[in-house]
Amino acid sequence: MTAVTFVVAMALYLYFTGGPRWLRSLTARIRHRIPGSRAGASAAARARQLRTPRVRIAEALGIRTQAGALATRSKIGAEGERRTAARLAPLALAGWRIWHDRALPHGRANVDHLAITPRGVVLVLDTKRWSARRPVSVSGGRLWHGTRDVTARLNGLRHEASTVAQVLGVPVIPVVVMDGPDVQGEPLELDGIHIIPARAVCTRLRVLVLGRRGHAPISQLDARVDQLLPPYMNGPTR
Image (cartoon, rainbow, N blue to C red; front, side, top):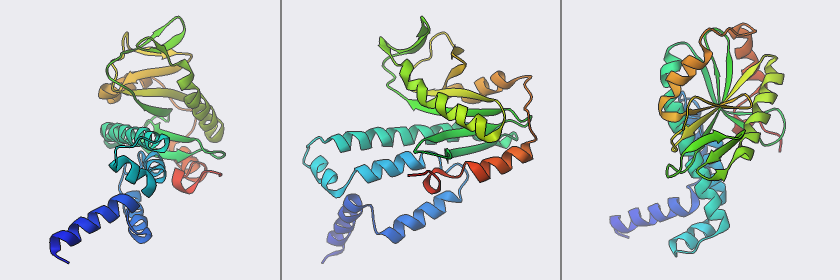
């Protein structure tokens, strides 16, 4: 076997299988130790799970599958969460506590991003990476993506914010970080949910929490998050 043939064979092996289990496990442990690297971890894992060797072969042959489409959406979502994590980095340097991809105590739901300001204000952030071809707006008490009513897509964030508030025992501000579409008429708010553009996430969050003070010491909130909202890959009840 020539060197070129070997390289091609290994590339195909990694593409269709994702690599041996020990390599995937080692990669996961390394990522877990890098700040912000957990962002999008569960969505990326879901994409890998859906894109089985059979689905990869179908894609290579130009055949569309439902699992492949779901995997693509999960991958896009993971990329959006990683982009948000990178954009939140200046807040972490300014003393904010930020976690990514945390599990709720029960079920399969997860929190994309959880942030606590230096004054103890808690925010739950949900990254939504939608098509940039249509703007996002609020009209008539509904959320619109172009002409499509997408209000129901806020239900998950409502549940996540409510659950985190119960777990931590403090009020929580729910925020949608919109990655892609223009946010018309910002700042937008619908039923207590704030909708901000990803490109200005740090600026908008600073304005949002200006003058607010939390209801518990940060050290106490830190301990509760670590104990009750573990990394999603290790925590959700199946």
